[in-house]
Length: 335
Image 1 (cartoon, rainbow, N blue to C red):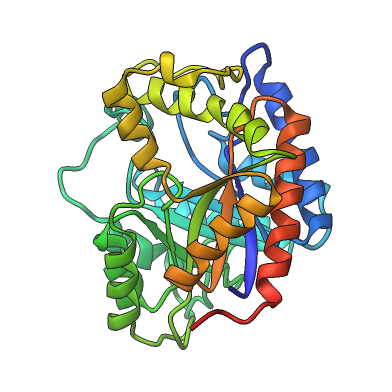
Image 2 (image 1 turned 30 degrees about the vertical axis):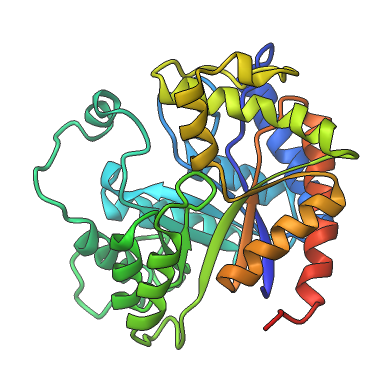
């Protein structure tokens, strides 16, 4: 692992507002920068009562303005929801305002339910144009030949780094084919992680953007002084995920002590499987679990994320994670 980074969904806690969530995002970003996180990514989700980062490019600009050197970006933008030119202009503007600091991760899923997807797109195209849209978008960031009829201004010649995001073989194969860095959403969909990394690494084609494969995987983290405290704090995310899975999304719940009683056993089994690429516990427990993940999958980067109701506890969790990952980064990987 060369670098470690942070994914923030700007959670809106029960008893709080979107304004609280966005203020917490800025505070956490400043802490993350001082703690050594390399990137700070935000994600596009719509019609979600518990997530405040729907207007992702605006929040990225807000975070970039509040920090100094840390890379800030999208993990990701759901490209089917947008015209490639619009995203090129948005991220070209960000790259013009904050040169050398902006990343653009692209996803193929809608990031919402289909009714909301229709409201976003107005017209739902029956065909999958994601590969073509990615290439069109990347072209806007390059130097446009003379006479090019459509240009992204700002955007042209900014060369914003583009990542492909995914949780299946599709994104891995596309990233390899285009010679782009790849980020796997193992923090909520780890089932295909090993197969996707193998497909990406084995079929990667060098490009003008990247000479060799570069992969980032994501892991959930909830760290505290003790294993018991961390398990208590992590119950908020378990409840939120269970409610989402059963069609009852809401704000990030307050933590509870006996979460198993609140979630039906079949749903809990699904939730724990989905969130299995994670580290919950004290500093020592988190170190052991993250080291296992790093040794198993050998990513170039690790991105951590975590939904904790209390902002102070969430900040402490990411501070502990940064200390652990700083140690793991300098240690040689085991054979």
